[in-house]
Length: 606
Image 1: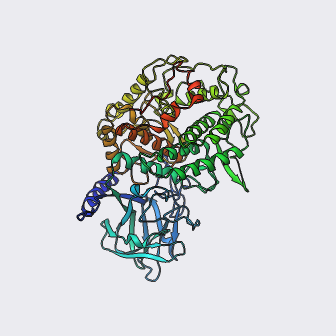
Image 2: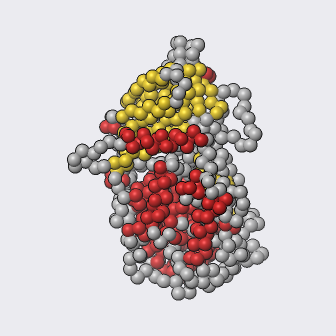
Image 3: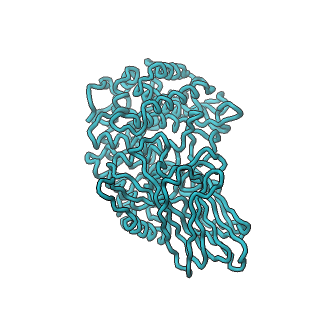
């Protein structure tokens, strides 16, 4: 972000400290974190110039920091200029007209059934203990002029309003307390420049009061809430991104991670959600996936709703790795929740995969089949890493005696990409030991530690004066690019990398023998504005010049499970996800591919 954005964070922190309410005797202490509804920055690639006209919307970035939609309003909305990292409204010569912007607070504006409860702003299924509340609002703007802020319900009724007078060109952050108990069904946040105003707006923020809960529980709750916002409780599928229409582009891998994270959230030690909610979520998704059309037993990578039916999304594939992720996540979740009938059906689904028909001439399994389910994709799972391991485990779950071909370049993640040696350990604990596996001869734990060390050392060596180096932020991994319009893969083997995907911090969190160090880094991310209450940003640049606030489901799943494992290690309580893997006979049998003496659960994990 530009230097003034960094300055903004420090001002926000100072303001947060000043605004923090003092708890009366017997009241619970809280801290305030500022959650942007929207900061009006614009992204351009290279020398790209804005088109003719004053408002420029990148369709890949036309969403708020809450994962909702927004738009313009007023008879003079054509006088809104947005070509730099701020919105300007020119009404100095128009004393009788107004213009401004609206922002949905939950879902898309047209979905009137989705509203935001300021007293319980996390998804409704999350327990009261983990719910923050929204008690303030702040506008960053400069004048001269006046701006009215309004919060409305789905019917358009004003629930709260405040007129903000501005003077001069100096940017001012105006914060106001909110009547929390009057805002149980908020839908739209609106700001409007009053007639005659010449104002600039850089952002609007909500002041989130967070309970004085342990940071490990807060990090898991916030990460899980981010994932749950992407899930459709009615269809059973998880949207690839929170701001997309339901049924437009759903991810099977993210859906699987959602099931497993929900089962973890129902852990009685935490009780973030109820066991009944978890069983309902896992059950509805299981039934929806059973209804999907498969190709040689494989599930689609992405699906969409056509009429009343969910089908493979056009121009995507039936995927071996997404089938592996979904089915293993579902199997673990079902066993964690005592859903043995569904677990047996998931095993039957895996055993229905036509493994031999998916092999390439090299013997490796293909990445999958084209969208028609007929043509074998030419690339296969040759590269070493966690995705390949999950596909190999799936092969043995499908056919216990089937041939599995060793990986190329064992122990070396492609380009040094962060998530590659970690994804398997979100599900299974076997790869967290210093023992050569029987397939490739790799000592997974030391290799993972070497990757973590390389990740942590990259920016202190390459950009020693950068914010990333100073704060210890790392994560050369994979996800959306800086502009939010393409997939980006980086890694520590490449030079000149600057884009960080912070999901790696949580994916690798249990490698640190001292969880307090990871929790301290997460606190620094929060204070820098990269871990607001709506969850970790998708990515950020090492120099602090930019970040992408997209609510993406796949990384949310990685983050939620990583945060759960960190919490279990920090508290020295049984890790219910890993215990489920250790207690599943079929997974134990499949794991002998790597470790012939693969252990079963013997007691609480430490």
